[in-house]
Image (tube, rainbow, N blue to C red; front, side, top):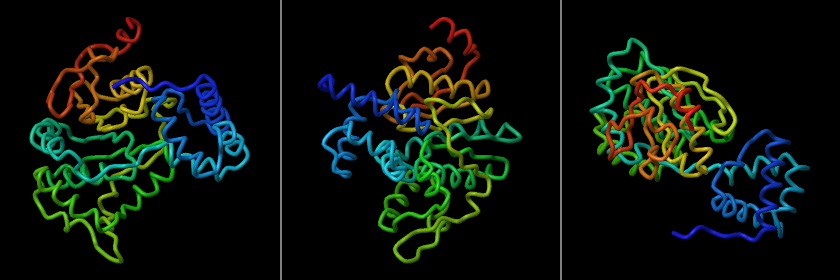
Length: 287
């Protein structure tokens, strides 16, 4: 696929808008894929009736409501429960036996969006008897997404797909055991959230905050440029205990990262890796 080419003035306008976002609101999108940003911001321009990114930047700096709306365009919140069921089956059958050896567990769901991946893991860990020894750190750059994740409410017309995914992922109970349906929505059992911490975290600017046994960050890196991908993978590696696990999305890889030597393939088909004994600091200095 050929790389998209934008006019020099469009690139300059994008640079200035991203710099304004960083300096005024402290949200850093400067390392995100340029083509993806142009497409998302084009939709934001249309919504706000702006003929250029410069006009959008003018509104952004003067109206906090525009910033809140713009975050909805810049952060992708599309997911589903047990998305790519084979990934969750691999976690259940191959990773969970290793996690059982720990007396307590910490799991980081980086880029949790509206919470579908968290509820998938919370249900899986409940079914495998690990819930009571686990803390789930659910992080995202978007405060609005985190509120939706914590609420755990999804349109009822999505539940059929969630249910099929859960079955294919090796679910041991009916998914209906975990939610209540009413008024066109499914409300997931609030006890699933009792071991969860929902918090803002920006992979572009924030640091490691916990030592964990599993990082699941699926379909986040694909929106980053190579430098930001490396930064995020460095954070994941720095947060994982030796022998901890990293799960990425089906189109993501760490093969070309400066930190690839810090991980070993665990389940190549499902993009699950294991932190090895390589020292991350040595890799940082060698890069």
